[in-house]
Length: 173
Length: 161
Image (tube, rainbow over all chains, first blue to last red; front, side, top):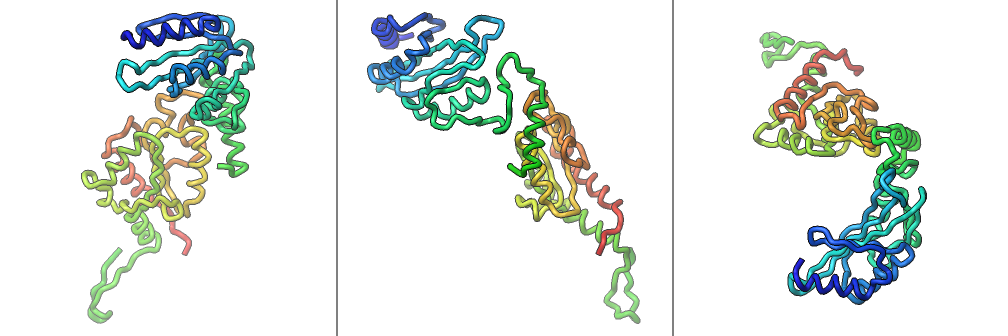
């Protein structure tokens, strides 16, 4: 991590220290774990004060039988700068408990989060409060499982077959 | 089939053949493929159609992207369950008679994708005539498959006229 990047990270640490549950650095990448309720507020501040205007990616992890709480949302934020050294990336993590987790949608801050959140909903069944159009994006619309959850058998083709049969009958394709 | 050039019959010559043979001969030498390419096998299929391998030599160069103008469906690439209903519908839109080639391991049996989303062989929902293994198959293998289809057409019964 170069000096300018380090300064930005340190400044974030200072100003947001009350809201950060955990912070660690690994191979020059910084991860912040924050409270679920504070997500929108902190993201807003990162955009306004530190110019993290780009949401590079957004995904989730299922830690079933590894740790509690079970789910974790991960946001990759990017900051553009005129000089190379000012380009910084940070990772925001939010822990989510329960089998039907819910979190605020970040579509109000980054429009690009729309389809990313739909994919996370499709694969993990995480609900995003305030999302404009929360539907499945990859799996068929009448699909009932969440395939990337650890308690889903990856070879279980029965739900897919059911949707396929429904498509054939309805001619909806 | 025989050619008659008897001067007393006009001298210009005419053919005698069976309806079954002339119909099958026409069909097998003017196959119009419908390329249903969904993955990397489709690249190899394009290679077969292009000048180096030149499927035109076997009369099958008229690719029709409309199923209504095609009689040979080449399914090349992984077929997911979501795509399967589309694939079946395209097949249903092709006019009879029609044939299907399953090109590549994925279409033959799911390939490496033993997962919740991938069909383990398109014969789950389509009547396949020729299977071509390989990941992807060599262009020669697809040419061989087309030739096998031609042999199959040769043995078909008389069409209704």
